[in-house]
Length: 114
Length: 115
Image (cartoon, rainbow over all chains, first blue to last red):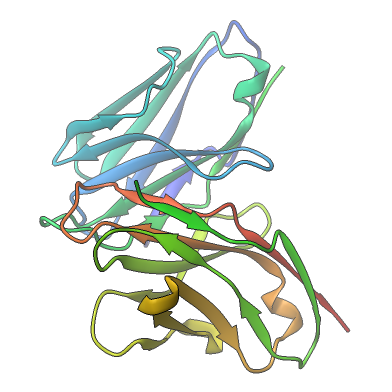
């Protein structure tokens, strides 16, 4: 595997379900990100992890719970979601060394909440 | 606060024609600038980036962009568009020395290519 991978690619879940999204980066980066992309809205940064520590949480509802066990893996745990949470969830990674570098994105997970 | 404006929501060009996608940013210092492309159902792919130096940067797939400080712009260009270039294009600005994860994206420009 190369680059940034995400699983599953598609997910349909009911509002009472619990599911997790997985992201893995094979680029030797030390920072990872979750973004939400909805139709007709700009990319929304949800969470940032740098060296496994969460450094940013952009007022995301608690029904989204991130986990970063190491610098290569990132999870987004989902529970009791709402239909408006249906979106494309993108994971990205970058090297962070005191300035902003380019981010590399995975293919995304298309989430549908029914 | 940083911001990015992509004034064109949707552009249609003929195959073989030239292309220019506009991007304007707001940032107090010299920004880091990026262009990404997203094909339907896919993630974002980095086309090119500007950090410093030559203001005309070359990217992948025959794209280039020019940083114009006086106009706060970073427009993306391609001399001859191919049908496979149909996608959505995002401009992003990052802070020079700012906090990690601080990439601000524009709302995107959708490019359609007609035969």
